Image (tube, rainbow, N blue to C red; front, side):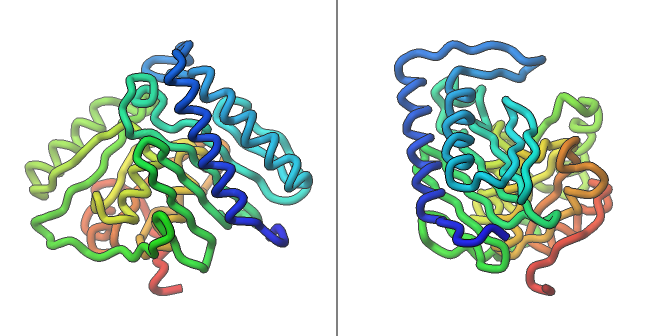
Length: 264
């Protein structure tokens, strides 16, 4: 692990980047299309460059994996950055978007920071040290079985029919409500804070997943082995929830367990 990680400075970095993104949006955005329903604005590019410049200066031995600029090898560890998760929401003026920063070393996520500027929500976790929202500790609790509300994501890298089948199964077989808000990283954080009781997406990229995954795990959630195979580079399915909810739906989502913080 990098020695002398300055978490307050990293959090300030994310907050300042969020304020810059808001300012760029308020002054008018130029938006281009990367693929179907996948957009990028000049704010995405600016935030990623800003984060990378800071991290390169403070942690020069590390590598980088960014949504917009790809991977750069380093000697020690890897910073994984999503400059704006929920770009469509961001460009439309909705508040459901965030900045996500994770640090990976020895094949494990060591820290995660997610900041949602329009909601003023700062989620932070370090491996083995718990998770927090705006400085308050997060501890997942199990919902009543008939009160479960899940977050769902839809990936255009997987068949639409599979997504529709999951909705049908949740409603008809499990009597479970769902929400789709269009920013997987922030939905993971809202699992940790109890605003939804689980999050599933058939394919999520690592820059969307890793920081939120650690925040959930440190709050007590169970997850699948997201990093199996080549998940860091190619992405994977993700299913995260309080343990009883996780076990209830794992067979349907066809995932296997890796983490249960309470058993570590």
